[in-house]
Amino acid sequence: MKFSDVIGQEEVAKRLIRMVEEDRLPHALLLCGPEGSGKMALALAFASYLLSDAAPQQASSSASLFGMEPEVPQRNANADAMLAKYEHPDLHFTFPVIRPAGTSSEHKMVSDDFIREWRDMLLDGPYFTMDQWLEQMNAANQQAQIGAGESDSLIRKLSLKSSQGGYKVSIIWLPERMNQECANKILKLLEEPPHQTVFLMVSEEPGALLETIRSRTQRIDIPRLPAETIAEALVTRRGIEPDEARRFSRIANGSWQKAIAALDADSEGHQFFQLFVSLMRTAYGRDVKAMKAWSEGVAAFGRERQIRFVEYCCRMVRENFMYNFGEPELCYMTQEEETFAVRFARFINEANVIEISELFARAQRDIGQNANGKIVFYHLIIQMTVLLTKK
Image (cartoon, rainbow, N blue to C red; front, side):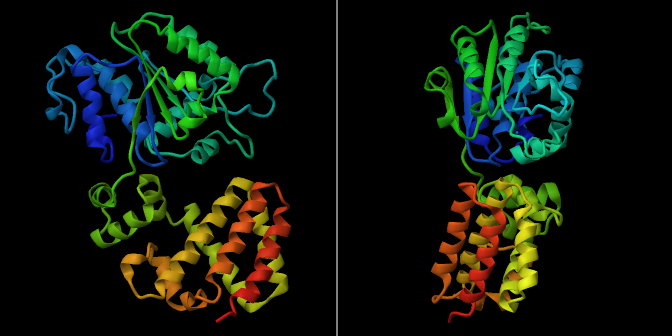
């Protein structure tokens, strides 16, 4: 992974390189930012930089780093080959894991139990979500966390000398998912870090970390990607037509993952669109049998997915309402969504938009409070039959 592979974030990359060039690299960095901003991509690129022959003693100025490593004559081909597969012996990964069915309760789950699946996902690309990782692990409805066994494993690994004589890099993805025992042991590591060890913590909820851990790291905030950056990357990396790239970049809201998901016909966003269309058509048609089948189908989702679906519906209500004003710059829809809005948008108007938005908001609240999904969604679709006729 190179800095040139990262989508945007050039200023953050230059800042990381300057830390090394100016010999002021802290032992622990906390990379914080929203999903899809490129936190993990930056962490992987920086780890590769530290562990390759583009080492601090040989680094040229950061101006030469796009894209992006300096030219170094004695580059270690073996190190590069290992880094390309994320198998470098001085690169250590910590990430949330599940306990598969049938695993002994005496076994403390560690990241190495899923290292093959982890590397496979990284090789597919450094932009991914927790839901994608759970799917990679076949987690079903399990929640992933970082337990005490992981901290013990990491302490053993980092107590060893660097196999290549340089840095040891520990990337901790979503450290906010550490349990209390693990967090306390990691804190001890941060207080007395092993020689030439760099911790790169990649977090989406830094506020959930222990204050004592945050105080022992240098925080770097990763901003959302500008729409122009996403559009350019879609054109150059994915071969998307400029007009389509611009549309997808606006929908992405600063997230490369959302932009890529919008391209996928089998993506969750596409599935949610089909469910939204079915909701509105079924409610308008007042087919009770179909309404019951729709509510039971959505209720079969896990709660997190139910919440994401309701959030999608809230967005679609907003976009269809704005579509009525005839100002394309105010709307953030895919071509598929806009095609549906041509005929549907008139049903979301001043007479009902607030009530429909509140209906979805109540459904989201009830699901979050563990209400019965079948009841929540059946009530939602029944109420929609009334609201859609308001003018």
